[in-house]
Image (cartoon, rainbow over all chains, first blue to last red):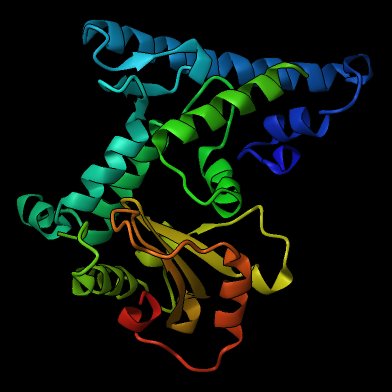
Length: 162
Length: 110
């Protein structure tokens, strides 16, 4: 299942295509692509870390979740920020936002929520959370944030071990 | 609120408003917000895309150039504890796609 996970960009696909092969067989181009992709993710994570520091770590970036922004509830389970945005998106009537921001279309307001959600899914492990969710959803009977965070974590270990 | 699944008219309205922004010439609404599902291998499912609103997920077939979208399947937010689990999702989507009968959104989500 895990090998079927695909990222959005070519460099990541190159890296994943190499899963299961010896690193010594990587070409210089492959290595460069992987390093470049990791470097980009680390730069984003570093920027996010500055923001979470400013917020006193109320939102946290943990290494075990690939610096996926999350908040830890009193049950110690992480509530990923992207999940938080999903709940907000679900609760807010977009037509009210449309009235407040009349220059925007209804679809743009929907796209804004999707954009924020996707940004909140950025992680240093390069895990495409929607892909993971899509596949796990059909294999697991129940999927809630704690389990999902665990999935992200295990996927990350899988990637990093290559 | 959309979060309450009993209020299906909100969901229907949300989808309709986004769909109506699309035209034959240009996609400005729902089509742009739908995402292809890379992990699906079946050729029958190739044109099914996923649209999200909050935690709700909608699986939709159609193209803005055809002026028609078919809502194949809905996975509502899991706020209703008594909702039946869909253990074989892709099979059900396929069944839905092969059915000629068009369903209203409220019927498809039932």
